[in-house]
Length: 410
Ligand SMILES: Cc1cc2nc3c(=O)[nH]c(=O)nc-3n(C[C@H](O)[C@H](O)[C@H](O)COP(=O)(O)OP(=O)(O)OC[C@H]3O[C@@H](n4cnc5c(N)ncnc54)[C@H](O)[C@@H]3O)c2cc1C
Figure 1 (tube, rainbow, N blue to C red):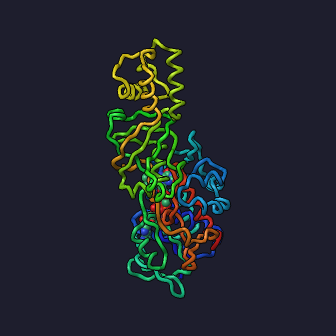
Figure 2: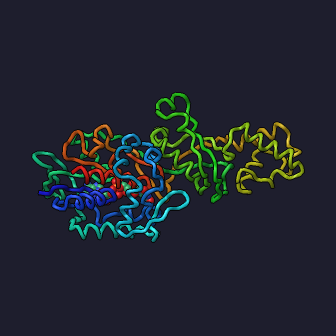
Figure 3: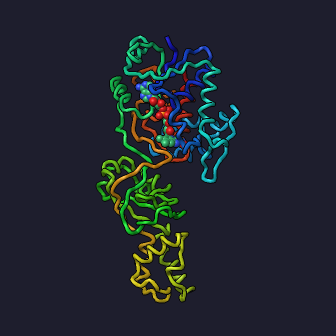
């Protein structure tokens, strides 16, 4: 009989197996993976570079990156956080580097470094990795009985690290767990509008994006007004808008956007200022540079071509100098720069990273051990839980920390 059967050969499953076996060398641990290969997502993560964690070393700040799971993760991060992740990899000879935006990668810029580290560790610790083994059933009697490729395998304890697998969530429901309906998170917004048409590739470093909900939608969403506004870089894509501001909003509002079937309105503020403040900036430029052509004076770090577009949506006369602009037109220009309404008619997948919001209800998990409160001996780590984060290495960090806590608790 196994001491610990791990279902899923992904990030969480491997990290738990290695740490469990390191801490308790006598444990009989095995990993069961349904695919032919393991660590598939780690390999493609971060555009093939694997963004292992984030240079955010304060646990209270760290949890703010998790729209779902922030309260629960605090105690988990107190036991194993971003600093520990860096130490863990460095102690295994992997040199990491921090990029300007805080994302941490192996210095090799190659996810194979992380994959090989995990495989080497399992090899050294003699942890069997059983591929092409799909767990199709799970029952708890005296011990756990797993139906794996129609063979029954017995285990004293089981870690579910099956990621966002619908069929496994169904099995867990059979054991009495509740699953919060999975919906996509981290996606870009599809928009057809002159505001951005044919401007693909242009970006603004500091913009704000506000989700426009009516009172009832806001109440039902359980979001606060401040959740609805996200700031950061904004990027025009082939289909619409992307960039950190959009991805953050897609994550925080994942559930309500799903309910709205991805048809909603946003307001974009390229000036990243309120209307009055934007108007003040424009008025100042008007009085200081009356003879300059408005179209040739881009402000707020807006690229020239995008600025021209907003200009043409705001003024009839393309050759206006600042002194020609009437009060009324100046106000319209300020409105378009600080509060431009756009209709979103769908979503697209973000190329580098996407996750699922939803999974095992966190009320049913004891975060001191990551153990089920319903089925003793059953543990959870990774995307199977109703925990997900913004882009930047936070999703892996949650998987590493949860897996570490399990290894300590066994
Ligand atoms: C393209 C992409 C890029 C990403 N990049 C990053 C990044 O750079 N940084 C970051 O922090 N996050 C990133 N993420 C998110 C991150 O990959 C996930 O949060 C993380 O992999 C979750 O780990 P996990 O172990 O829970 O699930 P997974 O890594 O998905 O592993 C689950 C495993 O369980 C197996 N499995 C499922 N059901 C069964 C079964 N019944 N029997 C046996 N095995 C089963 C699956 O085949 C899979 O191998 C990215 C995601 C994607 C899609």
